[in-house]
Image 1: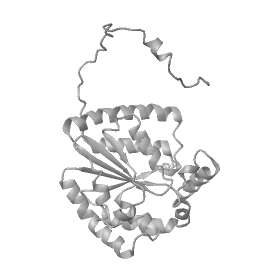
Image 2: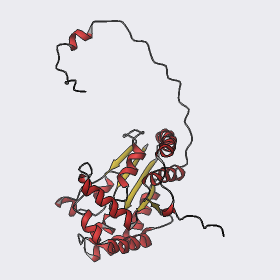
Image 3: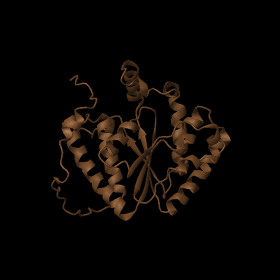
Image 4: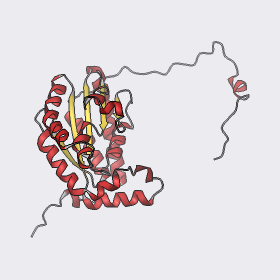
Length: 270
């Protein structure tokens, strides 16, 4: 009897060499997309949500490490101030929306209200219900205003989340990743699951759909995510003018090494 195909969670982890080769290819395409976004004056928002330790930070880094931060801007807002708490809920996010020729990536977004704020009791049930009612209408207004909205939910398994949290606890280079909300969230797995389901049911709309990204295999998730973004924004290669490096002018030449010799230098340790 033939074996049934492996489920995504059972796939073998992607090898580093294959990952790096494909990542470079996709990052090259992101640079081509970047030129198209600038050329056409596109405005794009990419929202990343998901469970704690789902891999949002690493995925965003893979997207942005080879493109211009002036085109691909990452927004990761801290907890709201007392003044921001008194504002319209989405107000502090709107000021970070893209201008022409920009892609804004939200590392968590207004969907905090549907997740951590709801589960941890930072908002009332009435505020949560009202958010789920209004969010599709607000997003429709955003999209009809000419902004493309891409929403990605990173889904990590119970086993893999536990492994990642334990790795953060044991590794001093990763302990900074443990936020005050991480450990409490671990104990409220099913509350977060129910909050996720309510959110997806209410806000997965034709004009602003959600796409779920399996993220147990971080490398595979990063590649799949970049491919999804590239597929979501139709683009073409913009032909660039040939670049020729100009010769150094000798006008006003002097020995600049002698001038530098009088300065303080960083000590050569290595």
